[in-house]
Length: 322
Image (cartoon, rainbow, N blue to C red; front, side, top):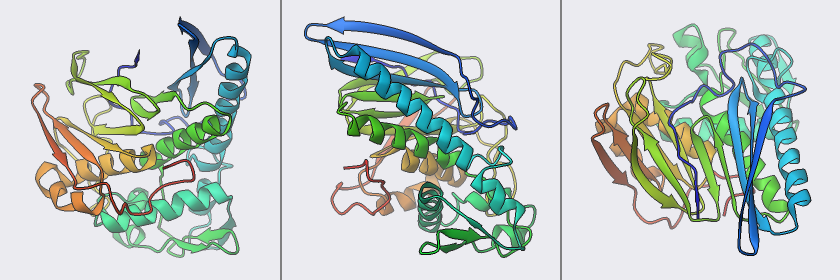
């Protein structure tokens, strides 16, 4: 069993920086060993200077293969950031925003998948989660995201529609990193990206940070296996979460963490549920079977809510998800 404390929260995916994925990135590396196995842990700044930490378990003597696999995962993350970041002028998301009301943009399979998943979650949360939140007008926030999956392109017909994928794309990228590591034979992996976490295999030990500015107090330590944790709150970045339905910033204390099968869903729901608030969000739980939701007060008080059976999960998952 290995420890990785989950310090919620950092949901502003690709940061507030206007930079794309760096060509070179700083990273640190550590390793630990147990009988017959070893654990490699690496950390690199990506996605707008978010620390992305990978821990992977592997048989002793297989360290070189683990190094190559984690390096490939970091390279994949950089490539996906360059496709998805609205802060990167050359990204496909930036193309859609730039061409709003003018025409369409050709898109990669990954960007199309992210847009389709975002629209589905938006529909299921009554637009409490909605990537059109960045639009400067009510008409823009209601504007269509028109997708031509066969033609591999999309458009924003309303000239004032703007999309921002910060609250789902970081989780999406981490899910793709896990998918790649699994394809290379690593079934025991945990990735933490600025507080949002995806655990493959396990059990892995995680915990929450008390949602109070400047606090490092750890709450609710627990073990997770094959789960993802996405968090949302205001205490680290101020009023940065916008209600897509009104265009107004949310002013609410505490935080919410969602456990789900994949991180794109967990992080998107954390944002949507935080917008809805603790009481109203409960009405949406049964639309997402198999999730757990923790509401944590600034003083550390907490409540847990669960949806019913994990059977008949809705199809909000990528190829990596079971």
